[in-house]
Length: 415
Ligand code: NAP
Image (cartoon, rainbow, N blue to C red; front, side, top):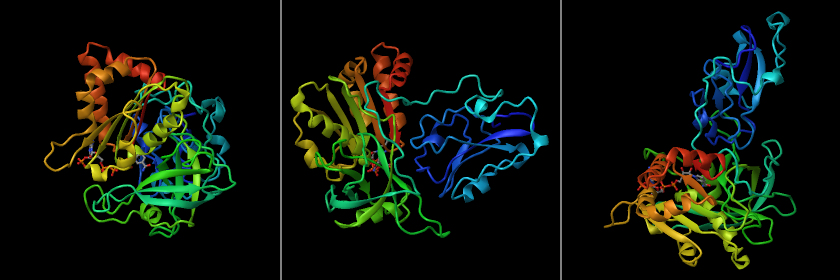
C-alpha cells in the first residue's frame, strides 16, 4: 500500500501528466508493478504503491515526484488519473482524519512504508551519470512554455527502396537557449488533438548531435525519427508525431520541450572507453557521442570506442554511409544485420559474444562506460551476453554489474 501516515491518511503517489514524456521508465523500474498507462497517461495504483521511491531517480523529467495528502478513502482512482490533463490541487483533508502523531508530509515523502519490501530490487541500469559527466540542464521548457525551433534540415538516412523510412531532422533554436549534452532527449509537441479532443502529448527523441551543435558552433541539434506506419504486430497505424516530423519542410517550426535526462551521459575525462550497443533509431545517442569524440580527435586523449549496431539490412541502417567512413583506428564497428538476404540472422548480442575477448578486456577496465539503446527486446539479450562473457572468463558478474551501476558505467535506454 502507498506510504501510510496513519490508518486514515495516505501520501498518494501521482505522476504529473503535464510534464511526463511517456518514456515508460517508471513503469519499467517499479519493482511491484504499481505503475501502468493507457494511450494518454502514466498513473500509479494507490492500492499497490508502497512509496519505495525506486522510480523517482530514473525519471528524466521529475514528473514522477508528486505526492498528495489524501484521506485513504478518497485516494484518486486509476480512472480519475487517466482522465487528467493536469494534477489536481491539494485537497483540504478533514481534521479528524489526521492522526495526531502523523509526521509532516515532507518528512515522509522519501521514506519507505513500514510494509515496503526490505530491499528494493536494483534496476538493471545505472541511475547516476559517469563521475566526469558534464552537468546537464533539464526541463528548461515545459508543455506550458514550449520553445519554437525551426527545421533547417530533414533528410532520409535509409535507402529509399526500403520500408524503414528514417529521417535525420535538424532543429535550430536561433537566439533562444537550448543547451544539451549527448545522451539527453527532447520532447516534440505535435499539433492537433487526439480522438477525445485533447492536445497530443509530447513524444520523446534522443539527440543525434553533440553538445556544440549539429553544425559546430551553431544553436542547433538533430534527432533521428522513424516514420511509424504499423504497430509492433504489423497492423496499420499512422504514428502521430513521427509522420508529422518526417513530413516537415525546411523553414517549418516545431514546438519543443526539455531538454531531458541526467544520467545517460558520457564521461568527460581523458581516455575513457565507450562501448555502445544499439538497434535501429537507438543509434541516435551513439551518433551524438561518436561525433563528440570525433571532434576531439586532435586533442589526442580519446579512449577506445566500440560499437555494436543492429539493423535489418545495410540499406536500413541509419547513417550507414557516414558511419563506414569513420577511421578504423578511431572506432571499432560491428554491424549485426538480421535480414540480409543469404546471410544468417545476426543480433548485436551475437556479435558481442563473437568479440568476447575484446568486450571482456574493456569491461574489466575501470574506465569503460557501456550504453545500450534501442528496442526493448534487445535489453535482456545484451545483458545475458555481458553476463555470459564475464562469467565464462571466470569473473564475478554480479559484482561487476553492481559496480558498473554504482559507478554510472552501464546505461540502458530501450523502448
Ligand atoms: P528495428 O528496425 O525494428 O530493429 C533494429 C534491429 O534490431 C533489427 O535488426 C531487428 O531484427 C533487431 N532486433 C529485434 N529484436 C531484437 C532483440 N530481441 N535483440 C536484438 N536485436 C533485435 O528498430 P527500430 O524500429 O528502428 O526501433 C528502434 C527502437 O529504438 C524503438 O523501439 C525506438 O523507440 C527506440 N529508440 C529510439 C530513439 C530515437 O531517438 N528515435 C531513442 C531511443 C530509443 P529483426 O526485426 O529482423 O528481428
